[in-house]
Image 1 (cartoon, rainbow, N blue to C red):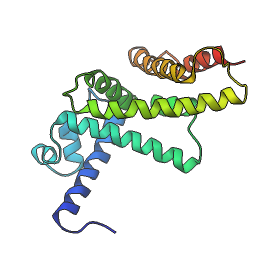
Image 2: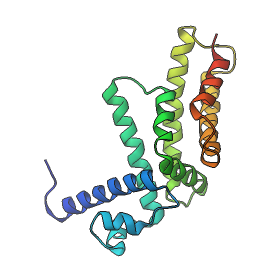
Image 3: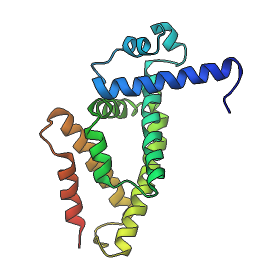
Image 4: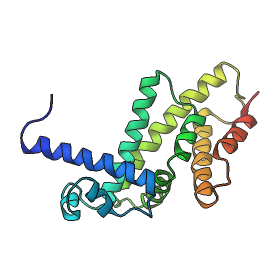
Length: 189
């Protein structure tokens, strides 16, 4: 049931803005998108758009949060975790969101930045998911068990994927899936 009153309308407008921003950034890129385009798509002014967010950085952080929530929902719908290949494929289809992710991840190193809390929550959850996948594969004997504990290996694999994304942004000839496949091949028994 929808919320009633001004708070419900405000929350609905905020979600509309986030959906529009997600689409615009995915299509046009982080650097190529102005918030005016997002505001125009939502039929409001730029000050009207900013009424719903503490700052531009807050809006961008919320776009990333929404992207992560949508990816999690897709995982739930499929009944199993997305493979790393599917996740990388989705990223290569939305270079603007990859650019936004990389830029915001760097900015989030500052504890005062609005994205800091998002990334501080994101990485432990992601590491836990990767650890579970690694342990499952170790238990079935499909990857080596003697390299490092699954927790440390998860940190390395996430670093590899994040680094591949950064290289891909600079040079689109880098095949993100192949690079990730190569790393996984090193782990196979």
